[in-house]
Length: 257
Image 1 (cartoon, rainbow, N blue to C red):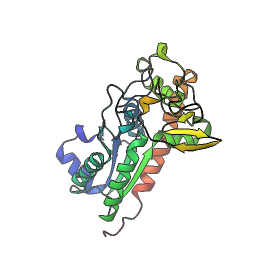
Image 2: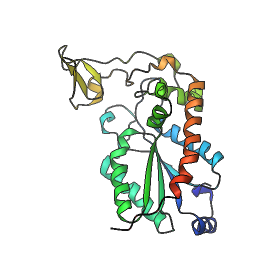
Image 3: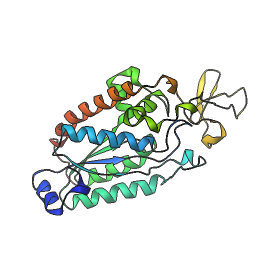
């Protein structure tokens, strides 16, 4: 049941019997030269379709396409709301739905950078008597099957895109990570904001564009991606979510602080 396609009497009837809403959060940011900027949006959108097939009576709100992604600000096309604005928007959306009867919120998140802001909003909602759960699909697949773990824009996310729409991936642009040791050979870059010194990883925050010529990072080379891998991952997450959401909807609500 899609909120944007429903009439207000239909929504009123829904909240007369249910109090659970699925909300989608994405991001518009780089995912390597081969993946589209909407990678973190397309996965939640596809998962929402799959979840709707399994739970047709669940109310699903429209996706928020933009997220908090300051580390990629220098890459053309990135749209960064920042943590505070994202927190405010997420909270305001949930407050509006609360006024109509929503109390259990499931946040399907496609971007790790959103988690801090969404977590702050969820804590505030809990103090107001609501239950919130954040489902981060790329973390979920790692727990469902450890060999599906992936980095940023690597084979995991590329496979999801290939499953959703093969035309999303520019296969001619597939290349290595292109990491640059911008702090010198003694402190080689190993991941986002991370360098290694004598076997120990150290966080050194700086613009990603200073050390990433491509944009994807991780142990899962996107050349190993396949549409079938993407189908298996997305189906597994949807199956799990279709069992989790009804169980979560039955959890008792906290007392307002």
